[in-house]
Image 1 (cartoon, protein in one colour):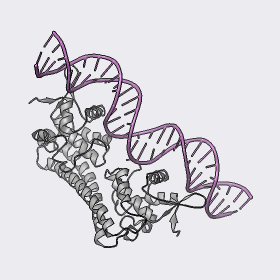
Image 2: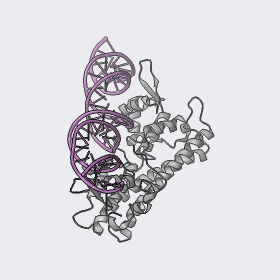
Image 3: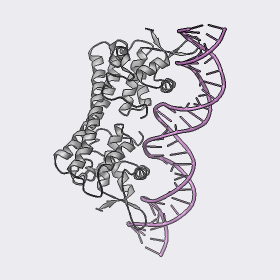
Image 4: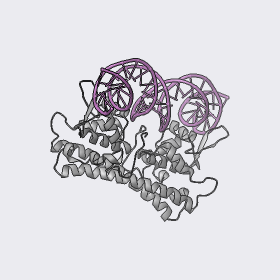
Length: 152
Length: 152
DNA sequence: CCTTGAGTTGAAGTGCCCTTCAACTTGCAG
DNA sequence: CTGCAAGTTGAAGGGCACTTCAACTCAAGG
């Protein structure tokens, strides 16, 4: 059992292609030390970062935002309690928001069958739109707390 | 109050740019009738579809997958109970999955402060990886039920 | 009528997130 | 020591989800 991982090993264990790992490194999301022959060697802790990256990404967070989050973890010193508190608090809020959005969408979809209305037309779940048109753009009932920018 | 919407009106009410609406139409996600002068007119129900599209998209579903879901709603006839049941069931499962993923991530992040370990290194939350390395690729604890393909 | 803002098209451009390729070099099993 | 899988780089390519542009046409108020 080695103490550091090659790019292939990290790729195999994280399920992320080597090319993607190199790309993440270029963007400053992960870090590698080099062997005398210039090959990357990853500490085991990088595997955790990669997991974090993929999960965050899967729920629609951009790599840039992920980088910002990971950057807030100091690497010159051991992260202290308030470092962690800051990162965690920021993410907790965004995750709560997304969880709420999803939960509402799921419940509304399910409710649409439950209520027996059988029609998007009359259901009024997806878009309460017209009654709220004066409030500005966006699907406002389901997306109550998440105004979405044009770009993903 | 008109019975159909122009592209500008739909854009304003949905918060989606006209260019994006035209794009959605090309992909078959939404539908428009044309005036004698070839301009698009949208039924109000399209607003609901757009809301649905944006919300689904926000949680990481591709337009292609959304199209498939929307396609399962017959438009030649009024969707019946089992049409709805099918669409809703499929989506409920995927939404449950994503909600679970997010909830675990959130709780783990929060727990990381709570437990006082203060270190990604020792916390073991993000990556249980090595103990499970034999099971194949992917961050398997947090992503228990969601093996993720390489492409977003 | 006429003007002006809104809409039309196809083609090209953009940003993000990678993958692929070519042309090498390294590392390790035999 | 050799052979070969695995790693290295920079540049180019590719898919998705749009946006922008140019060169028009349409719709509706004055």
